[in-house]
Image (cartoon, rainbow, N blue to C red; front, side, top):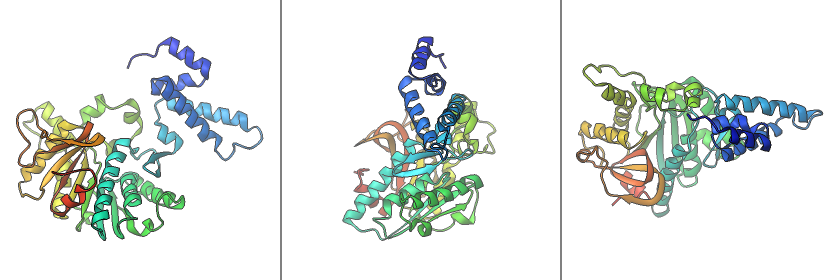
Length: 364
C-alpha cells in the first residue's frame, strides 16, 4: 500500500488534528471526514455526553476510537452497527460484518417476489438462510416480504454460537425499534447447523435457499483481503475448512477447490429440500463458472436455469453465457443480470421461474 503524501496529512491536520489518524485506513480525505463525523456523533450520543466535564471526556473517548480505527479495527465494530436495507444490524467482533453487495441481491430477490405477489398472491413461503451470521439476510427478507406473504417462515442457520447469539439480538433489536414487525419473533428462527454435514435443523423442505457462505481460499485470504478483514473479522466466516482428497491437483486448482468447498453441499441441500430458488453469493465471475459447472455435473436436471447477478443492477441483462473462455457451462448456461462485479449465482426450477419473472430479474 503506497504511503500517504505528507502534504495530505498536513492538510488533514489543519482541518482537524484527528483526521490524519483516519486517513490511514480510509486513504482519502472525504472518507476520513465522513468517518470522523460518524465517530463524533457516536461519542456525542453516549450516556455521559451531557454530564459535567463531558467535553473533555468526549474528546478523550473520540481520540481513543480514532486510534482504534487507525490500527485497522472496522468502523462497524467501533460504532456497533451497520445499516442493512431499512434495518440496523448490530455488529460485534467474531461475526462477519454485513456488506452492501449482500444487501443489494437480497433486496433484488425480495423485489422480484413482491412483484410476483402483486399479480398472483403468495400465501406461504419457507426460506432457509445458511451461514446466517448476524442474521442480516433473514431479517431483511422478512422485513420486505412479511407485508406481502401471510405465512412467511424464515430460518437462519449458523455453526457459530457467537453468530447465533448476535442474530437473536438483531431480531430483538430491530423488533424493539420497529424496523421489523413484531411477528418476526414467531416467524423468524435462528438455529445451530453445519451446512457441510447432516444437521437436523437443516432437514425439511424449503422454497428458497439463500446463503453467503465462506468462499475465500486460504491463499486469497492471506494475499487479497484487506488488513482489517484479516486481523479483525472471523476467518471461519470467510474461508471454508480445508477439503480432503486433493492429491494430484495443482496449486491453482487446490486454491479454487478450497474456496469452493461449500457450494456443492448447498446445492445438494437445495435439491434435497426441493427448493424452487437457490441464491448463493460468490467472489466473482470465475468462481461463478466453477459453481455452475459443479451444479451441472450433478446431472439430475433439478434446476431449469441460472443467472449471475452483478453488483450494479440496472434492470438489464445480457445473453452471453458465463464461460471459462472455451465453451458454455454445461446444459444450464448462465445469463448475466446487471453490470459490475459478479456477486450471486441464482438457480430456479418450476414455480421459482414464475416467482422471479415479475421482479425485474426478467427471464426470457
